[in-house]
Image (tube, rainbow, N blue to C red; front, side, top):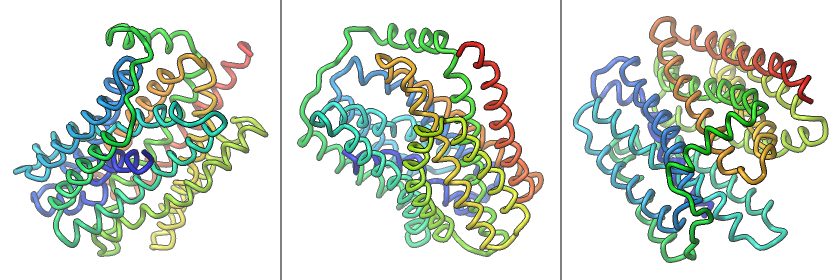
Length: 377
């Protein structure tokens, strides 16, 4: 199930190291091919909103296999895209159905034996992080060796294999709620309105993830423009995600001991230092150091904030998670748009200024939100 979760989420991020290749293949500008990344993030956010709540009202194994096979078909169609607009549409629809990991997570916890839920969550998160890293790395390497179409064709074959393994290996799991789809969707609004304390961490998380996608939406352009490197080298930057994967559990424990406030402050401070470093030290070493600091900050902030959000209403955790993650990836789509626009008008310097500004905005929201929450405490 962890491998399946990683394969699903990887389908959303294969495009990130390939944006430079798309620009050359379709003879398009960075601004135009940037919409591939924007469409992928937007599609994933929409898929989270529309499909994840179905996990409570539909048989989960069948739902999972249907979503994964649909994603495989869309990946195969994207591999045959004759033009950039079709590639953008394929990226949007493929990412909208690549949300199987968010259905697998609660399913895995449900199937785990008593007392082993924490270990199960850890295994699933490892699969997710590996999927994010390997998706970008393999996207760049396979793209350089065989072309970008082979990346999407290979992804389709992987997903078909994953769907077959899940169909034969997982038990049937009936719906847990006897509600209609409309009732479940309306309950999301009720949860959001009834929990004002989730607004601050949700907005801060969205701004933080926007800096992450801003970086990835423009990295391939910077690698080609300044360092004359291709998609393989850009994709290998995904391996810095190991640092974030190691830091996230520690940030969660720090938040448990000292409170989420200080963990968030530290994470945002790392983000400010990261973009200042990448903007001021225009060398490969500066880019690597800034990317590591940024990744640690983004992953640590999510670990510190998401646990608090899910504890607000224990009986509505799936819906709270849906709201939190939809906002996060909506922020990611906005970050991709801001990054591509900044690159088009001012190059890497403006990208780093935009990333610094978004991090500063997140810090402001956090501090102001804390002051507004104080009377409620």
